[in-house]
Length: 79
Image (cartoon, rainbow, N blue to C red; front, side):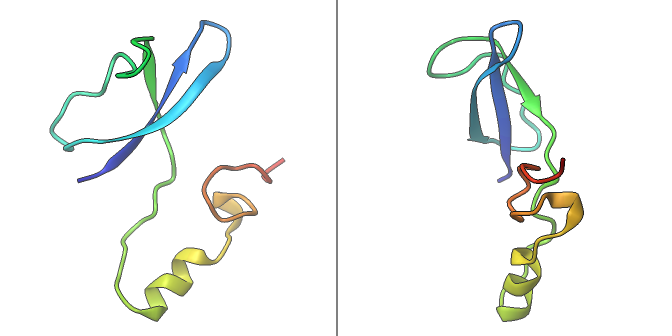
């Protein structure tokens, strides 16, 4: 089951970012289950295809320019 990233917003800026596991067939969340604030789904690069074994782990942990310098997909070093 995929994990999606959502952000709660106060109209000007993101307030809280969280992950939510749900079926690909489910509608996107419209409110944060904890705070009941409106949310929007954040488009992320994802992890791609996950394969077992050392080769798959090495490929996933290598930083790439499109995923940001830290390799986590957060784009914290893409400036």
